[in-house]
Amino acid sequence: VQLVESGGGLVQPGGSLRLSCAASGFTFSSYYMSWVRQAPGKGLEWVSDMAGDDGRTNYVDFVKGRFTISRDNAKSTLYLQINSLKPEDTALYYCARDLTGWGEYDYWGQGTQVTVSS
Image (cartoon, rainbow, N blue to C red; front, side):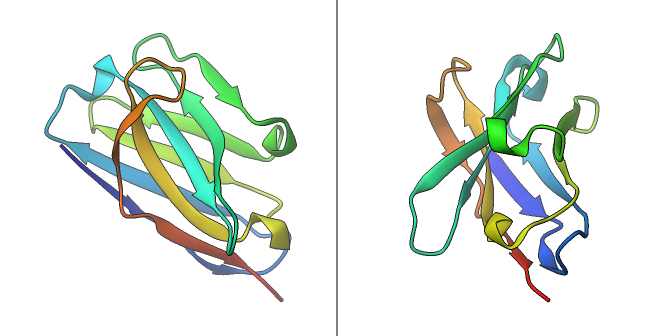
């Protein structure tokens, strides 16, 4: 199993980014997938997840309306569209495979850094 994130970078407040997570080594459509972030000096924070088959999505309250999770099962890729970025969104963003849809992560990517600063 391999998860490889990309798409992070330095962006000004109010800007947008699209993060990607390329998955391999397993049947992607069979699993919930999540985005989890870690801000500097803080713990891991779940952001969003998406079911493998029926498209159900969930978000932490403070990103609703700004973040959109999606996936392309044919390409085994998970996405996170982030709009209206705020400095407090600065973090290392990880994608993770979720065994149950309840935060039981068994594989993680290496993360992609998002820095929001003027």
